[in-house]
Amino acid sequence: MILRVSATILALVAPAAAQAGCENIAYESNRYTLCTVNLSEQKAELFLRDENGSVYGDFSRLPPQVSIAMNGGMYHADRRPVGHYIENGEEVMRVVPNAGPGNFGLLPNGVLCLNSASAEIYETLSYVSAAPTCDHATQSGPMLVIDGELHPRFLEDSTSRKRRNGVGVSEDGETLFLAITSNAVTFHEFGSLFRDYLGVRNALFLDGSISRLYDRENRRSDGGALMGPILAISDRATD
Image (cartoon, rainbow, N blue to C red):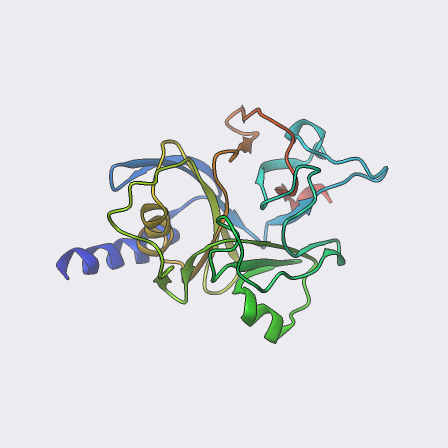
């Protein structure tokens, strides 16, 4: 109980002290890169295909004003999103509400909904019920944190460790937290980063072994196979 209280205190302090941009952090014996996005000053968007219908697939093909980016959800071999996907107000893929194989189908999963200066993460069935308007949306899974609690299937003593990336949203919807692991972690450890260190009430897993990050300021651009949806951040001053 004392350890949990200490973690809660840390969670209250950490987001307020965080500066916009990306930084390397250590938490509970694991290492992460954490990117903090102020949505009043920066915009968050999803990119899948360019104006010619070609998959972006790589950070190098994104618009030059993009300063931070990471893979934005699971995809099929042809780069189509596995779950619900909206880009610039247009629905590309419907909501998938049912359980299924793999991490995506480990219910509850969720939807990241992005609008002009705010974001929210919904559990999928809550998203269907609320039917929010989203400029951009991506469905992935599992949820990491759901209303302040870790996903019920996460085991503290799990031995399944992988590289992972995910996203969390502040309670007021004005700050987006993007995190990617520097070493292999369990789902329980990754969810704890969002709940106990960042203090967010809802966070969503985006992907695992293929997780990649672009951070222009720190000259980082992870390479690898072509991606599907990409979650990208750019400064509003460049509009």
